[in-house]
Length: 88
Image (cartoon, rainbow, N blue to C red):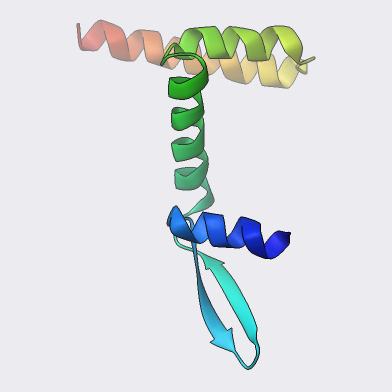
């Protein structure tokens, strides 16, 4: 049920709740980006044994990315390469 999902999320500190009459009002404890980052990191560690590159390659191969999305990937890769060059 939806309540079960929220209870699990609450145990994992993704959400909290307040009581409003007989209802629970749930709210996020972290910003969306922080939550997504945490979930993706755990997924990659669990499923891909921490191999983020392998995870990204699967995503690129399985999904039909738009030219704009591919451009965004290329830009992120360029920035990562430049950052790596400055911090060997």
